[in-house]
Each structure stands twice: as C-alpha cells, then as structure tokens.
Length: 200
Image (tube, rainbow, N blue to C red; front, side):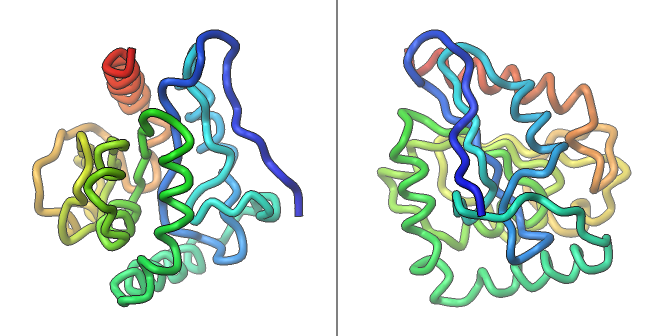
C-alpha cells in the first residue's frame, strides 16, 4: 500500500478540486488508471487540484493494475447493483463528504455507473451544492442533486444510450473511449474554468 497526495499546479489557493467517480473494475483498488490520471492532469491549472484516488477514495489503495474487460464489466455491474442497497450511503457517504469538504467546489468526473453511485449516496443539500458533475457515458436511473450536471453520451455508446434517459450532449465516442476524445477534454476544460471562476 502506498499513500497518495493530491496533484496540483503552483499558483493561487485551491478553488476547484477534480475527482473521478466511477465503478471499480477491481474491487480491491481505487487508484486512478493511467488514462484517468493523464486526463485529470490535463485539466490542472493554478488553483486546481486532482484527487489521487477514484471512488471510494482510499488513499492506501494498491497501485492500478489493468483488469480484463469481462471481469471489469462484472465488477462494475455488481457495484451498480450494490449501490442500491440501503447500507451503501452509510458505508461510503462519509468518504465522499470528506472529499467535498476539502475544497470550495469539486468537479466530479463520473464515468459509466458513477452517476448512479452518486445518486444513491444521497448527498445532503449543503454538500450537493459543493459539487458539479461531468458525466460521460452514464448508466443511471436518475440524476443526483448537484450544483451543475453536464452529461455526455457517445453516438457509438449503446451501453449509455440504453442506460441513461435524461438530457445529454451528443459526442463521437464509444463506451470505453471518452477520455481519449479531444472533444471531451475541451468540454471538461471549459466547465472547470467556469466553475473555478464562480469560486473567485
């Protein structure tokens, strides 16, 4: 196990925190994947920090190890279903609350079932207003209560097209490819800049 610190750029005090919220392809690990880390670092600017872990935000997580697609799909499906149980919010809500309290505002990058997990965590209103969400390829029954929500669904992403019925912005992407799309990075940068400006 290794301890991880938030990544940041020198400059003004922290105004915006960036954090991923997705299902766990490996239940024993919540370290950011190389792709997530690269995407998050591309969003850094003075006044922003990147949280070093994915949900459920255990800083003592082992290093990321690639998971086979079939196993990853199975684990994410189980995570999605388990998040509906009454004990899910009690078990994981405190970690998310601690994360959100660490910065004036947090932009959650919610991939796949991450939007469902967040909705099932049932944030109290005061905390819900301290975070905004960029959801990419969501699979969720409903939207969580947050300050702002922007949803991206790929034209080639049949998983999300079937798994999300709410408002969305169409982009060109498959379910596994969002973080590789320049359009997604541009949208994330624009949203992060707007949210940071609102905290000025």
